[in-house]
Image (cartoon, rainbow, N blue to C red; front, side, top):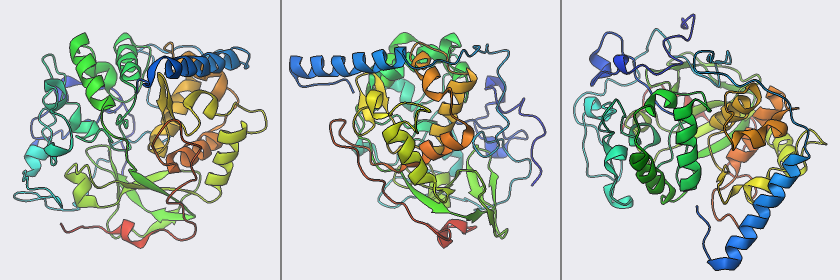
Length: 394
């Protein structure tokens, strides 16, 4: 497949390139954007003490000086498997004609309606509280509906963040960092330019109230389907192309192609990772990798499901987690919370980040006070045959 030679039109959000129906436009540019504690005074004191210890540990951890990047300086990193660039040639996986349906929902949408990023589909409205207007429809000034990328479940796709159950305070801080240019990447810098404080607060509280769920399985393998990046910046299996060695990559594919294209919040992903990634990642997460870093549980909680404003990371997309570790190291994330991560990632190479992301993504999201869970959904050997289907029926 012929890749775009430079990421200039794809690594920076441009409101002029938004079309109500991107499938019928010439350009076809479509973008995906990427718990407060409870239990009384004792719980609050306990959480504060843990966060204080985390900050104290990091204060004595070696910190690598990293130059912050401005919006003008920032460029999409040249790691195609983690930072996808839309392919010029788009194979047809499914004609998507007429009304589309997903299992268990009485709703019906045309693909044009599904692709309307100012009015994203809500297949299961009874499964969540009423959406704030900014989540369902966006706001003035080019602010698009949050659910178009993060879904009505908050779980998102590998090219966007999983926000379900993440602390509202943390989400608000990240929106502020995107707006101020203290966090680069994805498309959120442009998306937050005209985002009001009230809309940011409402969206953050709504996503924080959603329940975290298992969204992908993590599979160790030596071969993966050959793939391409579609107009939504989502990786898909390339029809009839067979497979190839995975190398040092994470390849995340939909469990069901048609349901992913419908933005079905009940159909997740399979994250393929190199053999041995989970064991290596567990070593880093639980011991600090023989001095390369610190134990992740110190700051993210005993089960990596968050601690105060420190975010939950268990069960999130491995590809997304890799990108964030990379951003911390290269300086693309340099807000106040990001500063805590500089020393953590200072000695990591890309293979370390890949292994950590694979292991953390394999853990089960849940209660922050539970013990560190075992990896789920892991398997070794050949890839799952169904993942290479070129067409999926509904």
